[in-house]
Length: 193
Image (cartoon, rainbow, N blue to C red; front, side):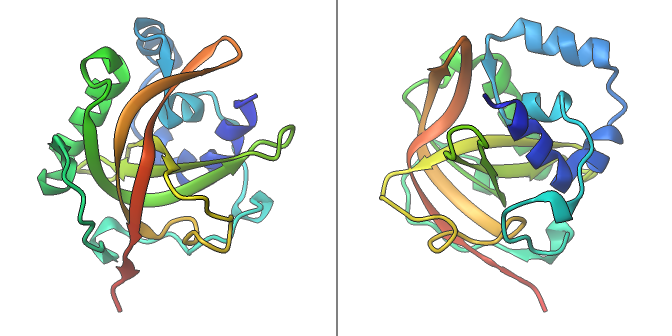
């Protein structure tokens, strides 16, 4: 079901993810260590696609330094917005590898917005993508908004800076377990001129 998720999200960061130099064997070992999957797991199985193949409004690729994040009034137990990019990337990796330690905790994170539409169910999946300090590798956390919102009207373009806060959970679709921030709130930043 989410196989297409990997293909769609790959358009935004497949080249950056390839630059990390992780072998497919080590990626497979990492996935085997955790039964939960994230946006990043989907990306590791992705095939290359182009921005033109996406069905979502896309903002041209920008560097993290060119993003200005909006404040979000959300009281989080784990506030990743105050950490360096290296620490954020490491903490998101911990969430992926040991999700049980984070279940039920409130999390706040900032990154770039991304979306996937499942071609079979027409369901939308939203995520906040974060890059490591060198901006060569990306990891992401899916989120489900607490309010009933309509896509694309109530959402930013893919690639825009977002700050997201929600409660960490796992959920199953079919045989696969995924991670997300449920009942999430988000605010949209802007690009620096």
